Image (cartoon, rainbow, N blue to C red; front, side, top):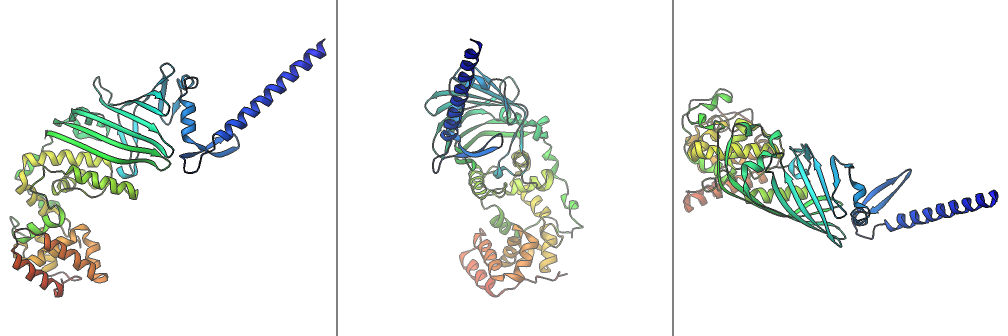
Length: 420
């Protein structure tokens, strides 16, 4: 009797083991990605294989499996299952890392992500940013496709101060800044094998005002002392003003210190190239970088730079901003400031520069030391950039512009020597 019972139990165990092995084998094969499907490396013990991410997501959000995620932690997010169709994830603090935002992660005080399973491969929910009682709330909807997760998200008009408060750990200026206005956002993105890819980004700012950062102190201060000793030049006049605007910020007199469309364009370009944030800074933002934030390429610095730029437009005005910028710009060979640069590179005062000379000097600003070397190694390209700046100088009569462009063809700057 006992032998029969033991034999029966052994048979049952073998059958269960066989069934488990069969199920595991079927599951293992079911995870195999189809050609072109979003896949990831899956490790189970000593085994590794490429697994279909859509299949994994379908399994994880199945009503029988989703409750099993309760209490687990994944990539810094603590999960909480609420029934069989809803999952809430929380992280505090959170670190957002995107190549297009720079090498440093953007810190968020707290984020809560809710996920509602709405049927076959459809999900929606909210992303709440901030630790206060009224966090910024972004509604989102996603559909699971072969290549990845297609996401649409929208932030309705929300007080700008409320949104920025979520990034307080990265923005020390928030402790003293008074920020008015609202921000809204529409976004389309995909999450796939290459990570996040934003395909549509439409931010909107309204009635923005920033105060409390102390930029009004720049109305009368002599910032030239930040550079090496400057020649006495006073106010910088002449073609160099228009040349710098043509080279650095052609819409300087038309924007409020920032250009959202340019930000979006550069973000998408940097995203494609996998490079950190660069470009799209206005003259006002570049002045903020020179005076306050430094030049580290990350999203936090860009936000800080934007805060100072928004305030400087109000406290200083365009004329003072341009004069400060011309007094501080690095111009190669350890020189900064337009007056010092004109005397060092061209042997004359900035106010005495001809349009082609001003255009050449402004053409260096993209990377002064590199551009100076370029005139020795790749003169055609360097001359082409100077011509591009010259063509963009406003208030230059057409006949004078054509004459200056003709003269630029044979004109050679005194590169390689300092004129005194």
